[in-house]
Length: 381
Image 1 (cartoon, rainbow, N blue to C red):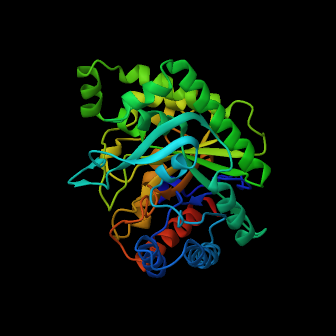
Image 2 (image 1 turned 90 degrees about the vertical axis):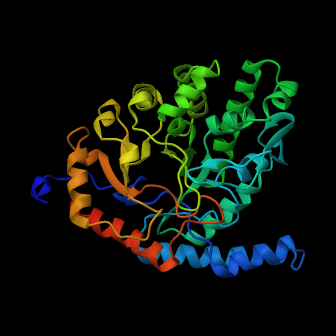
């Protein structure tokens, strides 16, 4: 701890991200899992399921407050996926089964995806009511956070195996597709802002895939260009961010896959650092650094004026990290980005899908407390 035992004064964080932070999703409680199962079986109504969701979200928010989190989420308790539920709620997008699930290290997910039924628009999206409920449950002592998949994630899903032809049928001109995605997301940002959202998080696995050497080689052999994809994703991200309200914090979480404690991609941030960190205009990045698969901290030198939440505490395992080791790693990261621009967090959510990772709720909260207590020992807040 000697590396950080200084008299340095740190900026007190009044807006997200906070010195001790999380990514967003939480393990689904047993009562919620039971209700979702009974709803699928036709044993309870949608209203009865919603009542259970409401109750469990209120309980979760109180637990988040009690733990000391300054920005709270609804745990994504109303979703089955971290991304697809939002995409299914867009006008012109509908749910469909895919031939295969997403491939993970040793696992495969449920085979679900999207198809286009018309041009993409943002309308009366169900997530708006979800946020209003969270806003009211959170009260005035903490900041409610809305998490949604990044626009590049929608683009990637539209060209996932089996979707390309259906996408081309609606959008033979890809420039029109790009324009409609940006417009839909801008409308989403505006709509969330109007109902009180001041903390929006864009979750993204596309950048994580572009860090993976095997995936980059696959793209090249298939006639693709990973660097061109990176420029496209940055264009989508920045198109959405253009003109956003100045008092709305927008952050981005870069993920390498999080399903039932497994992962999808591997590799350090070097291949995308210059484009991602050097050009995408979010206020902060939540970055995975919980394993050797994420590489070193050197790419942080490409960060411009953003904050970075170091995802050093894994949500994939119940084993608690050593506070001393966490402090040491934060000190290592501060060689590339000033300590005042760093925060400490979890590497991902605890349940990016409703299946959840392989740990208990008690172990989950121990992880949250570890993050907060370690952050206080470093930054004093």
